[in-house]
Image 1 (tube, rainbow, N blue to C red):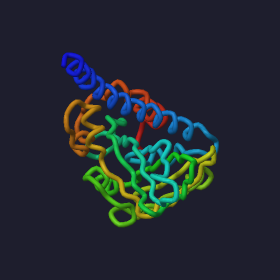
Image 2: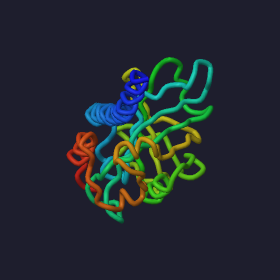
Image 3: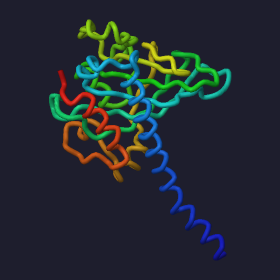
Length: 224
């Protein structure tokens, strides 16, 4: 009986630590993906990042199962702070991605996705809860670095990119569903959070997320 109670106690302590480590790993992987794509010559243009209100990063998205078209990923959203979303990059929010039967057919290869949220309209819709690209917020494959300076379409809320096997390009995600990852957010902040209130407020950036937020603030300190 004592051994059983000891096992239960160990599991009770270990499970929250394991869940937290998964959140920390997601933040670390997202930082690595974004850093790579911001430093590649053909990667994400600083011009577009300067115009973006938020950035979504989904590292290593895979198919749910062999032969199934759907994909599912877990990533992180970072938005500029303040009511007008023109302040420094703020505290992150954990998000999920479900492409259903659309999007890139991944096979056994993992794909990194990055989305630039270009309008406050799009940011508000994403922060309000689960939505579908195309239906709730307009999305388009992001322009390459050479074309980025000419992008100025107020009707496009989200620009989408993908990277697989080192190849980076604009991507079409069809009607992919995006939603807040409530469990992961609670693990990160120690309590349930409201995404919109977090962005509009001045919540402290968790230690595990500081490298990601610092990368954004260093690369794009001002909203243009």
